Image (tube, rainbow, N blue to C red; front, side, top):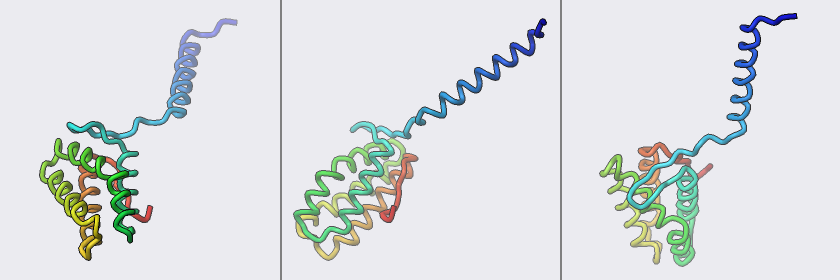
Length: 140
């Protein structure tokens, strides 16, 4: 029995599409990234930095807050600001200014620390939004 070529060809194309779709479904989609003069910032970097800032916001002791800030957020904030500078220089400046306010008071946790932290979280989220990176809230 002879099968018309169009049916075989169509079946092969359909099979190829199924294989490609299944292969693609098993692969993770590439993560969104942004870059600046200090390197690449990934979505994971964004989430980790915000998690550190959220944790820092709840800090009560100056030494613990200082360690958390410098170990988990400080360098990444500079990287994020450098990437933001590529798309919005003013937003990068606001982020660095907010970081400086927190950094200046972190060893003593003055009364202004809470509002400075809110300002830093807001500036960081705005910068990440400019980059198209995730900027979840502290309750996530």
